[in-house]
Image 1 (tube, one colour):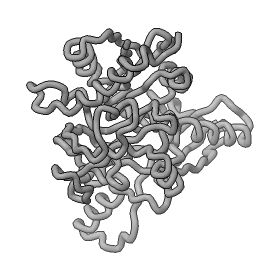
Image 2: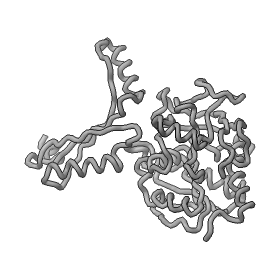
Image 3: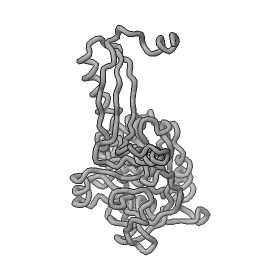
Image 4: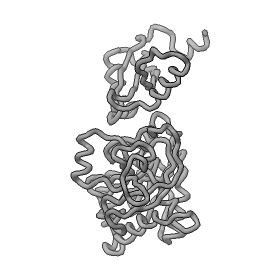
Length: 237
Length: 94
């Protein structure tokens, strides 16, 4: 399974993702500059966190119109998988690949802390190694992570089981206190209708080995690899 | 042609920055402020002569990039039709 880690001017988690994929998962991975529209050699594209284009205009707005992001819908339609974390989630929403938007944290503070996530959907290629109701521990680090969408969109997200993670307490209760940014219904991560594109505000790449203090992020990476073992390859080249 | 584009959060969406500024104003004694909402102003110079055309192009820009329709709304204001000095010239003169 070959991973592509997209780099925009201002991306900061690209090296972290690259490290986890190459050194911990021992999988092939390459950096992909944001101007590249050719994703034909990859099975999974990662949009890492950071401050692409300095968050100018809106977080993810300018990156959301770049050649690599414009190539993602076709890539996903061919069976490719896309994971956007933090700024990557903002970019996917700005590009309209995922519904809704990420707004300034309700507390107005930049929040850099560990959070607990309730797995709502364990059927996606990103969570098939988890079980529904499992609580994962991963850090967040963002100023604009308050998920928002209109009522109709929220209804659709629920009907189609597109809400993958919600912020919760350590014991798995979805409460206001466990919500670090004011996200609608504690939403921390969603998938597209087909389940092939995941956007989440937490950082799985910063919870991937003992030295980082947390390892639950590995469950997401192992879920991805498990799919490869079963299917041979995601992409029919 | 010079224009201004105003981008604001839709009514009904909590504007946390606006609320914080309003509270700060209250702290300074400006208790008459009932509501305060923050947004962005973009000053745009266009190589266009026709105001209707400029307006429609700017609206297209708003839909494609300048505003996020999920949470924001926008208004476009044509400031002048090109007969007044452009921004950099004015800056030099001032």
